[in-house]
Image (cartoon, rainbow, N blue to C red; front, side, top):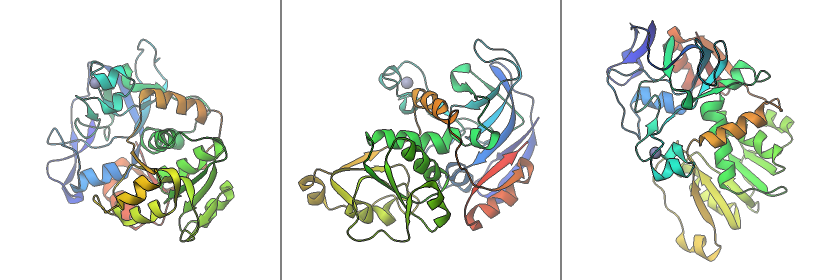
Length: 317
Ligand SMILES: [Zn+2]
C-alpha cells in the first residue's frame, strides 16, 4: 500500500512510500483525511509532543470503510478514528479521561498515523458514523468537532450565557454551532461575516465594554489579555491552542479579585465523542471546505494551507 512518510521535518521531505498492508487488528480502508494545525505543525517540525517512530506517517484525523467484521463494527461500515492512544489501566482512563492517559498520546504523533491507504486499528478506537452525517463532516469530527465540544463542556455552560469565541477556523466553526445548539448567546471575533447567517454576532474587534460568561481562545498569547478583559466576573476562559504564542502574562489580581477561571482543554474522551455523534446525527452543520485534494498531492495542500483565506482542507483517497 501507499503511504505518506517523512524522515526529516519540512514539507519538502515528504515521500510517498510503499509498505505491506497492516494486519493484526481491524483493517480499515482510508477514504478521507483532514489537514489540521496538528498535522501541519507536525510535518513542519513545530511540535509540542514527542514524535515517533521515524520515519513517520502523519495524519491524525481520518475516516474509512471497515474491511472486516469486528465485535461491534461490521464490514462495510463507515468509521472514524478516535485518535488517542490509551492503556485502559491508569487513573485517567478509569475516570473516563482516556485522552489524558498517563501512558498515552495522540495517534499520528506518538505512533504512525493515517495518511495511508489502510490502517489496522483496535475497535476501542473506532466509531461507526451515523448514516446522515456526510463524509466531509465525518472526517472533521475526530479533531475539529471533538476539541470544540469538550472545550465548551469544560466551561460548564448553561442556556442563555454569553459565549465569545476567538477565530472561526475548523474548531471555531463547530464551537459556534454547538454553542448555539446548547442555547448559548454566541459571539465571534473573526473577519468572516458570513458567519452571521448562523445567528451569531461577529466582531472585527471586540467592543471595549463587551463581557462574556465564557471565552474560548485557542489562539494563544497574542489574544490572551484581550480574552481576559472580555471575561465577566466568575467567567471561564477556555484554551486549547497556542497559534500566536505559548507563554503570556496575566494579571493575577484580575484573576482572583474577579474569581475568573482559566481552563485547559485538549481533544476529548470517547464519552465526549459518543455524545457528539449523537448531536451531529440530528443536526446538519455548516462546514466550509476550501478545497479537496488527492492525498498524493499533499504538497499542494500544505502550500495552500497557510495561504488560503478560510475553509478546511480535506484529502481524498
Ligand atoms: Zn491510561
